[in-house]
Length: 341
Image 1 (cartoon, one colour):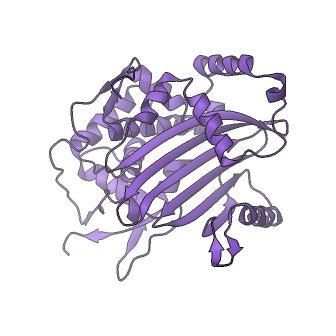
Image 2 (image 1 turned 60 degrees about the horizontal axis):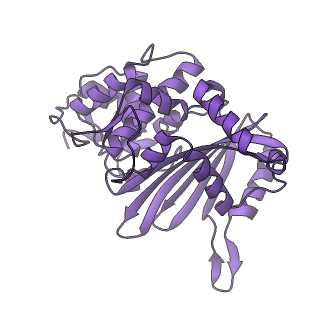
């Protein structure tokens, strides 16, 4: 890293991610620990508990915000949801710093319209990513980074248009025609990595490791398949696990002219799970066909020693027109902890 130039608007933080005074909690319920990614259920999948009550994560995030002395608004909920995903234990100092960083470029902390919600989610995610990597982003740099985390229809900007024009100039006539077949993993990796290195901010942040033995990377890129151009954002979180090797998450947002897909791919203790959302809604018959295609492409293949390779569990279902990662994280059911106990 010593030979890597630090982009403008970004500097290393001098404070640890969990700095600040310990929070004092009030009320009948306390929030569950937020520092265990391996125990977090998949997006939209209920947590399994024994002999206790569970509540939606959104309610726990609201209780946590109130206990730390902050508004129970959309901004607090988003910051706490992402902090939990990144295994960061929030305190009053940290949550306050994150709110100040994101609120500087937001018009409201509880937007009502779809675009406002997408902007808030992207800004909150960008701020938590920077906190996890131990860096501080200037307001302009935070906004610039967040634009690449938003749905393509909300992220149009001069920089993105400039990068697109540069890529188009470099492409040959054969590349302009696109591909007839969906590219394999190695080709996608080359395309995503190549386009990410064109942006000095992404290239730098993707190289930085995070806290808690984890590494977060973002790869926005465009690809043309059978004449259809797709906007793709890959978000990858790799986590080193002593007991099971490398665990992690991959969230892929794919936007085409008529349809969108959000794919949650998770590896935990050597088990692979795929949760695929389709937008707008498909008929039940179409969903069944997509389920069969997904199982054929990504499922385990019969072998002499049992099923080999592929995902252990694959789920394909309809989703909302404007997918929100915050809403997925808030839809989890978490154990409610009674302070009297």
